[in-house]
Each structure stands twice: as C-alpha cells, then as structure tokens.
Length: 159
Length: 159
Image 1 (cartoon, rainbow over the protein chains, first blue to last red):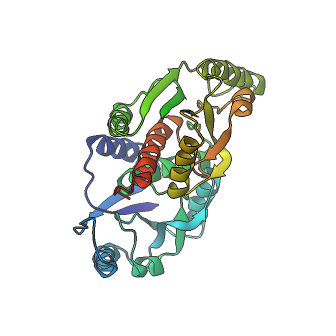
Image 2: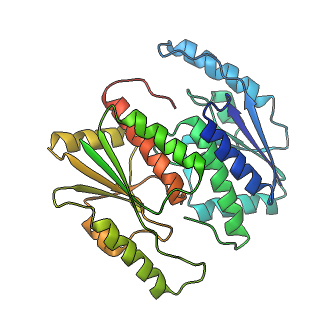
C-alpha cells in the first residue's frame, strides 16, 4: 500500500522533524510512505475573509496537483468522522481489501483546507473536536497509521 | 493558577523532551506549571488481568500521593468528555473564576488509570476516541493548555 501524506509548509521545529523521521522509519516496514510538503502561503494575523479564502485556495490547488485520479483521499477535518484506533486500523485494512492501493492523507495549513480539497476527499476524518497545530498533527497522524498497522498485524503497541 | 501534570514514567525520546520543554517555557507566561513523573511499573506484553490491575494500582497510588485535598483533578480518559479547544479554554477559565487555583491533569501509563484515580477525578477529559501514546499525550496536553490560555487572553495562536 502506498500512503502519501500531503501537508502544507515545512516543519520548523527540530523535535517535530525528529518525531516524523522516527515514525516514518517505523512505518517503512508496513507501507510505502511519502510525505509531500506544499508551500504555505503567507498568512498574517489580520486578514479579511476573502484573503483567507485566497490562501486556502492557493494551498488547495498545490495539494490537488499531487493527487492522482485513482487515489483514495482522506482529508483531516475537525468536523469529520471520529474513529477509535481499532476502527482506524479496520478502515485502512478495508481500503486494502477493496483494492485501494494509493491512499493520501491531507493535513491543511493554519487556515484549514479549501472547499475544492474537501470536495475531492473520499473521507473526512477527525482526530478530535480540539484543534491541534497542523505541524504536530503530522506526528499524531503518522503514529496512528503506525498503530493501525500494528493492530492489523496483531503486534503489540504502546499506549 | 497552579497547573500540575502528573504522568507515569520518564520520557524516553529526545524529541518528546524538547517538545515538552518548549511548551513548558511558553506556558510559564500564563501559569505556574509543574510536571511530576511517577515511576512506571514493569509491564511486559503478556500479563494476566490481575497483574495489569496490580500495575495500575501501584502507579495509581503513586499518583494519588501527589494530589492535595483542594486540588481539582482532571483525569485524561478515552471515555471522558470531549471538548473543543474553545470549550477547553472556557473550562480552565471557569475553574479560575470558581477559585480553583490548583489543577492537576493526570495522564496514565501504558495500561491506563486505576479505579481509585478515576474515582478521585473531578472531571474525565477525552482528547479523542483514538488512543495516543501516553508520552506523546504529554505534548498534546501541554499544547492544548497553552492554546487554552491564548484563546482566553484573545491572543493569536496557530492551527
């Protein structure tokens, strides 16, 4: 299974880079992982709604360029469906059974995802009703995919 | 406000230590933060239910020793109540208004929290129906407390 994580902006903090690198290494045993960083648009604190929309649109267009027609797209969205770790593991497993070999998880930038990206998504997944920083979200998502595979294979995993 | 985070076990990964240190520094502007690590009991993969209970009990006793009578205790539990980031910010703010100046957040070890700790808790808070590693949970919790204060003060915060 090919798993692509499409994110906005480069990781700034060293500890996030290390965490991502650690989980990427662990995941390489279970799937082919690619992490794509599309450029983040400048988003100053005070923007009009139109300016915010424009930032999301531009980032969205850059995201969509990396999605192939046959890719199953999971958009991370706060109002998406919530799953347990076991449910998420089943979700990935079911995609494999249904022959979906390309899965993309999309994490929006600091303003979230554009309408076009959400429309392209096959599934909207929420990790929490809380907002997490999108850069930390990358680590949380990778860990959960790793956990999902461990559950699928009946291997022990930490809590 | 005095915020104590009681956790089980020492952080192993360097990137987690750095993340905790970064958010602790940022939080020091808003509250008096203390992080207490109680020792984790050995928990091999294959344990009977009685052995697991015994580990949770021992860790629970160590946790309870650090809780004063007047402390408002928030236990992190997967089946607890879920809040939005704004709701969590209101929650902390309300505790302050109600004169609760000592708040303890408790993150269990790899097997979770004992019955005694859950019984002592004034509030059970869930971050997600997903299970996160308890060591990473420390970072997620600190970030969310920091975000809560930023929301409370009307200061900008990243998503």
